[in-house]
Length: 104
Image (cartoon, rainbow, N blue to C red; front, side, top):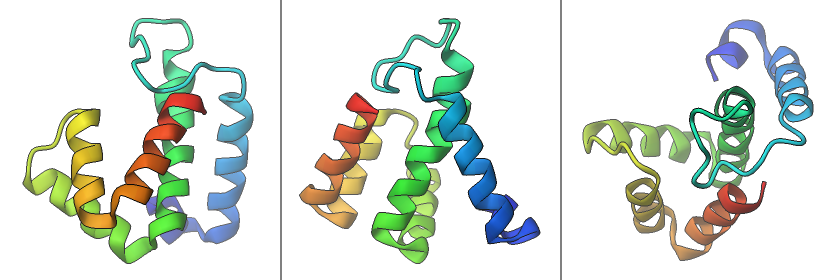
């Protein structure tokens, strides 16, 4: 989001496209091994791509609010994040995002 704010939508979309390509054959984020050879692609390429999908789905204002709640509540793991997401955005969004984490 900072990249988009500083360099514009076109640069942001180009970077996301590159990240999608770089992480295309990596395993899902769900329960990924941080010491695996593909960890960089999983967490630092695929992670931003999936978070951008969440932002598109719930809107930028709601996404920023979610991030602020995450920091305020010291959310530091996936299950707590998904629980908070379900409480703020509903079960449909929570289940959709959990599925992305498990399959993409």
